[in-house]
Every structure is written in structure tokens, then in C-alpha cells.
Image 1 (cartoon, rainbow, N blue to C red):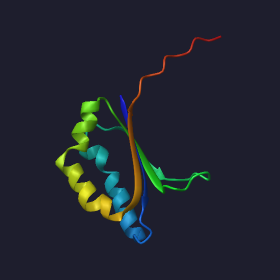
Image 2: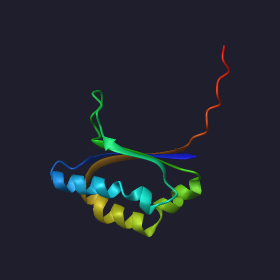
Image 3: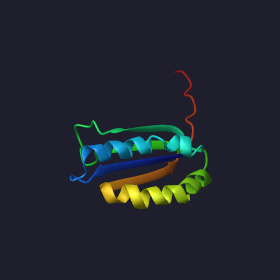
Length: 106
């Protein structure tokens, strides 16, 4: 399984309505990209680091599924036309995750 994490901060001049519209659009992604699993999106509630205002996590069964999503025309268009114009900063991390083996009772 591949976990894909995106942390981001909107530009300070972006109206609240635009923020809400973009977040609502992001929430449609699991229906638009069937390979997505365990989607979660939310605002940052950390009291330790407020660098990023929002984040989402999603899982894909394979690296190929992640690649297909990232290189799809609709994703590329969203990033170019909707995402980049309103973002101040973002961090993206994708990594393989293996299931933990259940621990033997002591």
C-alpha cells in the first residue's frame, strides 16, 4: 500500500469562500478516482506547528495506482488551474506502508 500525504497552506489573500470551494472539490476526489482508499481531509488543529493550515491523506493499493492518479489529465488540470493559484505553500510525501504484524502477547 502507498500512503500519500499533502499538507498545505492557502495564500493569506484567498477569500474564505474560495477556501471552502476548494476543500469541497478535494472531497470529491475519492468518487472521481476509484483507486483512492481511506481518504481524510481536515484543518490543522496542532498547537505545536501551524505552518500548514490543512492536510489530507489517502492510500493507494500500488505505486502504479498513485502514479495513474497523479498523471491523470483531470488531476493535472486541477493542480494547474485550481490548486497552485491559491496556495502559499505545500508539502507532499508518498511512501510504502506494510501491514504491521500482530504482536504476540507477553
